[in-house]
Length: 314
Image (cartoon, rainbow, N blue to C red; front, top):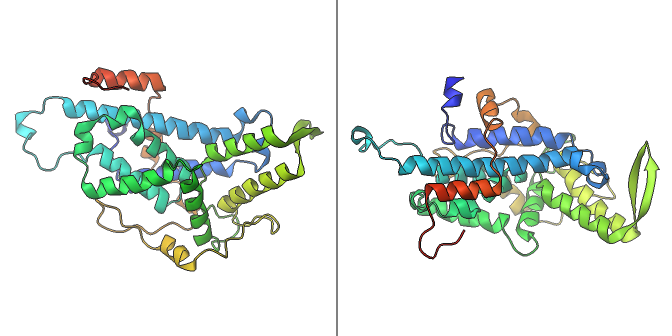
């Protein structure tokens, strides 16, 4: 218990953190009823919302943990230890590696987006001393990851990458979880479809279901198909996106071992994410017991650690 209580964000290897986040995200995603949980009127209480809430929790918790690392770095270091060459890993570089592994080894887009939200938040981007300790190679990796997580062309980077991963692992088998989608993106997609194409409601099994026009039903079917391919890998034949036309070379590349800057051995992508459980129980407890600070609290914490420089805005 004490080892967990004194742990920091760099106490576990990046692969172990990414794996445990994926175990949690997989458990949450497995409970989502597709598409019912996305269209129900009380979807704020649905398993799909729990996936979104966990993304938000991880993003804010990791930002807070990085701020703690920044604060610790600014404290005076005892002379006896100042010359040590084996200090703790750079926390920013550590989490860039976690994001890289989440995306390319575990295909966990929900966790990947959460970590990238933390790393790209203004409160974290101003931690110049921590960022200065990140190698140029890891910074280059970060820029590539940012193109996927923050593509302004209607998040095309996310969708293109998701479809590439689904194509590469489409033969894993029925009931396998081959990817964790970014649930908030798809929930917003469905909200937009409902707002644009809703024609009414009908009662079924004691609840009210939305009724969409034909174009809206087709759009919803496309969203449903993608989500089902992430989880069961066997959507209805009529709904299945035609992934066969995509490059087989790209498919093979997505299955190759992933080299991560700072790690000695490349990591082999996991085929079925359901096979990862239970993972590291101590880390599981630690991840789920981190303080949650809202956006304003994170800003206040950042400013308390380092007041604004001349001309700086946050």
